[in-house]
Image (tube, rainbow, N blue to C red; front, side):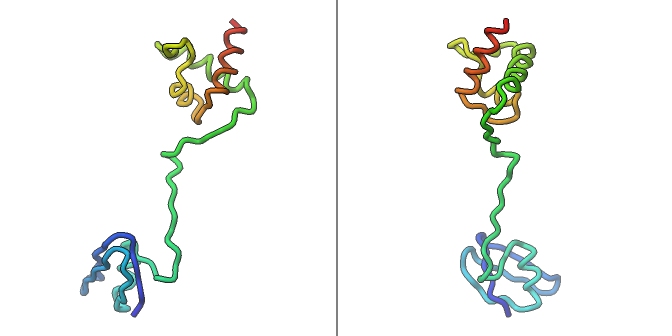
Length: 120
């Protein structure tokens, strides 16, 4: 027997026997069901829970070190986007961040925008 726990209530089966592990409650599980429970997301009580971070959904925050890089992205955005400016006349921050493939700060946007206007 093994003492297992899960963050969620899970049902599991090894083909001949079935089991249920309620959420956040340590339960002793028969040896023949331990592998099935672990496969469904249970863990041993003495283990730390696995922490998973989905990097694809979290924006990358990058301090812009080279203003010319952001300037090149800004030039491309201005050429390709039909309505690139916000109501104040600045480049839209979210659109620029999409083009740069990272979260661009307002300060970096303003610096690149000033350089863009001087270059024109």
